[in-house]
Image 1 (tube, rainbow, N blue to C red):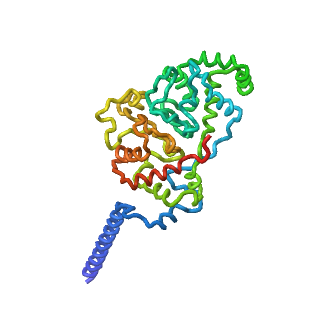
Image 2: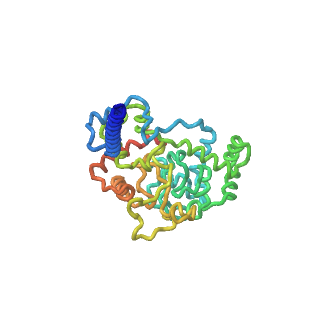
Image 3: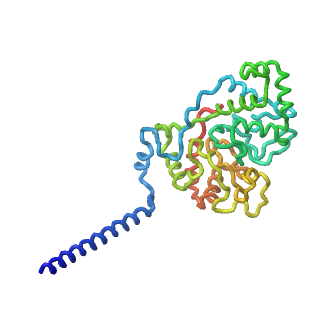
Length: 349
């Protein structure tokens, strides 16, 4: 009798254990199913989208970050750097200054496919903007300079650009009584290469351009229109933020140009178009470039390292095709472009 009761209890316990296992497996499978469903299966209602993206506080969960307040700059160095940045005497024949290729009145670029150096020589790659360069993790398309100071020497010594030597630059500056006096007051020495680089770099650190997007990121719900917010939502949804995120909306990583399709197929790439390969010599770095910042992008045509288009709409469509593998609709392109205009600085120098 006791054995039959024991068997009955054991059988009852086994049935409940089996039922519990079935329920547990069902719940687990349901959770897995839910996890792998698309999180955006339909367009959210306009008022829901607006409420979601217009919280009245700083938005800490966004892929974009507002421009942070920089440490106090040395006003004397900034002023001297400004003079040097615009001084054509830094070039061999006195015809080209830093501002020649990086015109602050036109978005920090010269709007040419290739910049012209001394003697009208043409460069081999499209000049990037100097605005917000302080937020780039490295400088130049191929990232060969690790700091703004290091970057200064590049064009100054390049035979196609300013084509000068430090010896001649310093001789010129030392012969200018007012310039030499400024260096002595700030650096307690005659002009040196290090001081020239330091002053220009300090000036370039001042070239930051907060925009309406920064105000929105900091909690100003009225800074952007519903249409611009829709463009930003599409910018995120399509995956543009995979490369264009952070404080500079780019400028903080390297990426291959042509992730989903070969951009260089059928064309002979120039040496400059080998990108990061020119620095590392590694095969996998061919056609890899520093992702450019999108701040002020509406002002900096033509676009890409090769200046292949003057149209921001076409640039967005090309990025969708070659980087994301998506043929963006004209409506989505126009909406994203509307958002990109919100990245134009409200106070350009």
